[in-house]
Amino acid sequence: MTPVFAKAYGPAEVHFQLEDCDARVEPRKVLMCTPEFYTIVDVKNVHMQNQKGNVNKEKANIQWDAIRNTYLAFKNQKLIDEVYVIDGVDSLEDMVFVANQSFPWVMWNGEKIALMSRMRFENRQNEIPYIEDFYKDHGYKIVELQSKYHFEGMGDMVAHPGKRLLYGGYGFRSEKQVYDEISRTLDVPIITLELINENHYHLDTCFLPLNHTEVLIAPDAFTPESIAIIRRMFEGVYEIPDTEAIEGFACNAHIIYGANRATSGAIIQKNNPVALNIIQQSANIVAEVETSEYIKSGGSVFCLKMMVY
Ligand code: ARG
View 1 (cartoon, rainbow, N blue to C red):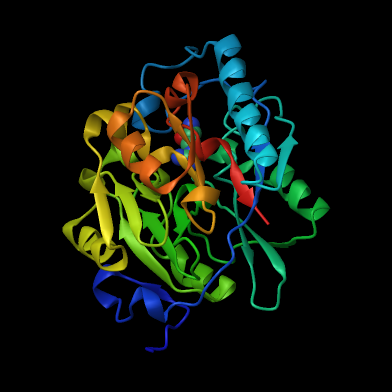
View 2: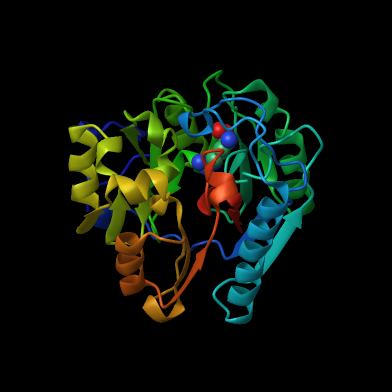
């Protein structure tokens, strides 16, 4: 086994294999944030262009409820253990996208850490204290970044299923340099992936591991070097066409990683037949939902939840 050091690796610097990385237990609890203050007031990503004031609030509430109900059904089916909901806050119109403000992690000694983001946009930074409150109530140690670099939580940093290995996206929101500090803080290797297509401004819009050997990607989102390292770390790499990856936010589905297909589930935006078909091969219970009101803001299912320990 090659020793794998806790540092940030560019695609060309990865000297280890997936088998060299330690095993990790997946989180089994879901956190959501209520949508009553969700709206679009500015343009933080290309999907938000011409969408100011264009959210149908009633539809947004119905769509969010349907996702929460799906998670509750998953809880009954024992795919997940809990569904936590925190209240949205007036004037924090993007707080509903609860994947972005933090990154939860369990250290080797069992300590639960909530690494807090440094959001690129000032008004989103104001969401952080409310998310911290949730973690404080649930036995986490809050950790702030020491460096000044931007980092947008699970929007840009995605774990390899079942492994102590992270992928850190950068280019639009998070900054490459932040991953050095994060790898040391969480004591985990991070493979950095440069994002080059503004439609995929967060890693979670273009990179969706299905299990520890397979991943869905939007190929146009990445440099050739990044594609090459993704192909080295995953045996099966499925390229999703733009119609589904950009318009349908197919790679922003949420996979609930069980021990095998029977105990795995997924929630995906409707009308993504290519991605749906692939996901159904690795997850037994797959729910399709409508997230059109959130896609207007650049997010779908994955962005609307946080998996916590
Ligand atoms: N309007 C939000 C923003 O631009 C959307 C965030 C979507 N979240 C995600 N994890 N991709 O910040």
